[in-house]
Image (cartoon, rainbow, N blue to C red; front, side, top):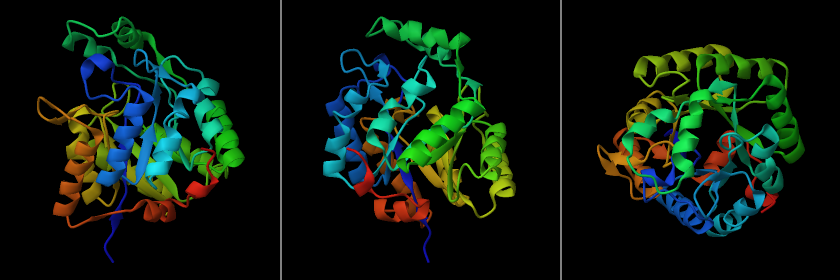
Length: 309
């Protein structure tokens, strides 16, 4: 039986700023349009953040999310995955507002507190579309993304137990895998786990094949048959590491949240273009992509009829 690969598309995120690409979706209309396009191109899971439509600044406002979530659900059966990562410097309660309001099938969950350096991007641009952008990036020199054990417990209880939401466990380093194993041992998370290996963020594990193999070996020891993994390579590492991950038996994540380019020096014109590119790789490997219905079965999700949008 042919193995199915789940494509996740992370549509806009909170890392890149509007100056960096004219194709980065900002308004609810743009986010909905690009999310729907990504689903039509083959993404079974849509990982979603929101932005202030006036200036593109990341926002946790549930009202902004509710301007695009119903439109996405009406146009596609893709699984909606709402970020609880938010953006600097949101508190855990701010970061979970939208997910609590929408009660999605999935939400992301960063498995630890970490440095999260975005400031190297400052040297790449001479002019900025909005005044907030350089200050936002520079602030990451002294920013710690906070997700303590207590924060994780809160998210698991309020979203997981309270809303029936399951998680994309984002693991930015090997220690995050051990933290996830701790919560599995305590019975606070339940298989099948969906583990996103995140490589190439300044403050996390490096983006190279040896590190991906190390993450996979460690997860195999900790979780055995109780997990499925996906691979997120930041920036130019997106396609090579996703391709490697698929060949290793995993799933893949692409999208403008993680990488703005389609080829060297060529901005991706849409999220759908990146989904299309990874589909070419999967086709070349003889792999089939999972439909949203198949992804729901693989990840034991509650179903789109039990969300609140």
